[in-house]
Image 1 (cartoon, rainbow, N blue to C red):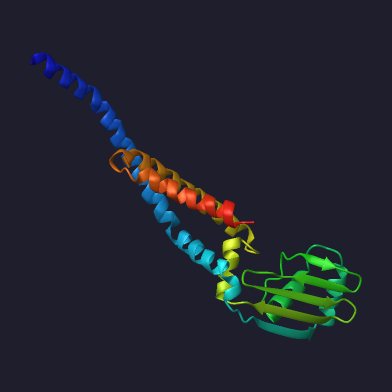
Image 2: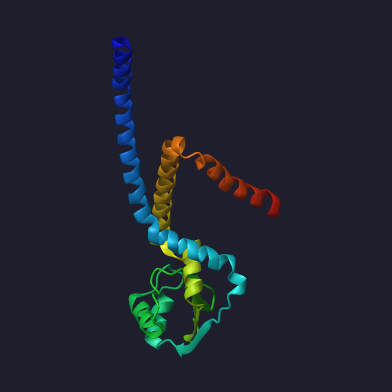
Amino acid sequence: MLDTTSRLSAQEATAQPSRKRRKIWLQQLHQWHWISSAICLMGMLLFSITGITLNHAGQIEAQPKIIRINDTLPPALLASLLERDGQAQLAAPVTMWLNDRFDERIQNRKLEWSEDELYIAMPRPGGDAWLSIDLTTGELEYERTDRGWISYFNDLHKGRHTGAVWSVFIDAFAAACLVFCITGLLLLQMHSKHRPATWPTVALGLGVMLFSMIVFIH
């Protein structure tokens, strides 16, 4: 009887460090899991909703609003523009005048110079804009297209014409999603002994995805 009690005590003493390590790992995984889920929450909602709207883009009608403006660049500004012909940036007075006239951010845009015309493309999420300046007469032609909020958020999803800051955000968001998924997988593994349906459910999700890819995507 004493030998049996001693063996049980020894086994319990051996198991205690293992339980302690498991408890520490569970606490760390739960903490990283909920922190990453909180960080990803709004982004996952955005990308999930826009994933649906992108998947049905052909069925969602959009009525673009187009604004066209014709004007003439003042002679003094045209002379200043000609002085910088072929350069990557416009003179500050020309930039300020164009910004005020068309409510656009002209600075840091790519300038396309030709023999008698300056063309400035100004794409943006959910729309487009361009400006053409005749270098001989100073005549301006401006057009802006707005395709609506759904198109705007769809372009955010694709990272289309969104700039460097949004690109960095997408990378950081993707990293947080990886943390969320990996910690979730490790939590599944740690609880799987008491939840027999864990791995069959995971396998079902993987199987549905692979089946759809192999059978229905051509």
